[in-house]
Length: 141
Image 1 (cartoon, rainbow, N blue to C red):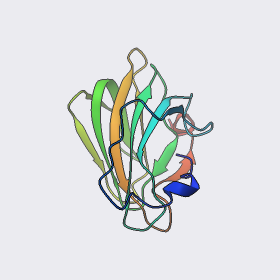
Image 2: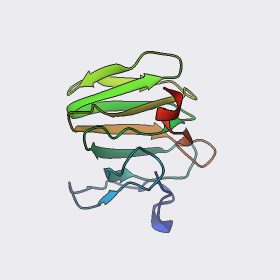
Image 3: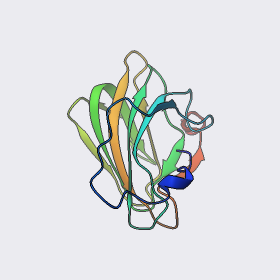
Image 4: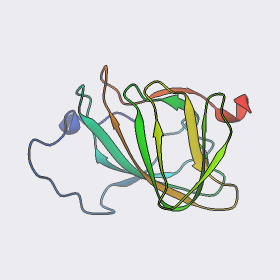
């Protein structure tokens, strides 16, 4: 996602409550086949800290190819989604499923053509970032 605001360069230093729905924004352009809703829960650019978010994708919206330097845990909250690692098959996931993408593993994820998809994801920061965007997954299919 886009970089954190200056006050969010590091994770909070103490217990912090994030009230649901208080920071939902549209995703940046150019990271998926369409815009989707993102709620940042943790933002950081500090190595070994975490970033975390909830995402809500309309039917058919999928991310571009990307990787995470320290890996990514994705937990499906609702709907049906698809995930694919480079060189692997497209796999459908449903509410309650969790997906682990290994460090540096190129992949994409998104909503099935006929259903919304929402998920929680967490990824650690390395080299000041938690994600490396590569290209549009449609170009690789």
